[in-house]
Length: 188
Image (spheres, rainbow, N blue to C red):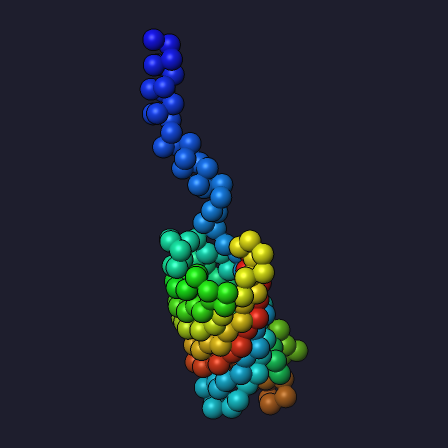
């Protein structure tokens, strides 16, 4: 009788034990650190270069899809000191069955604007940002992988400052940055 009760308890607990074991083996959370080199045009059609560092947190929905958030710091115009701190919601799809896994990442959100310059800054306003990226992940060990990709980034931002070289006039620049970028990163 006692053995039968223990067997019933074990059978009732088996699905929970199996689920706990599965969760230990396959953690659905993934992190990434990426460095970006980007170039593109601003509102005045001048070609601008910049760099970015980003951190991403992804939650796997299955073997091939994930949802996540990306944040970081992006330097859009090195000469004028224009910065963006993006916060993007992302959706990613990858082919997880190959040694070199191709992926596509789509992101949209808001970019908070900031400026570092020797001119007095009166105001900065961020705006909508969107991101499309195609790339490859190359597994290193376990769930750690090297990643590289090409992408397109759109970002709106407005910067208002005083021009100390031109009669102290107020200068307002509203940009719609359109960037092509290359990134390298580590995912774990």
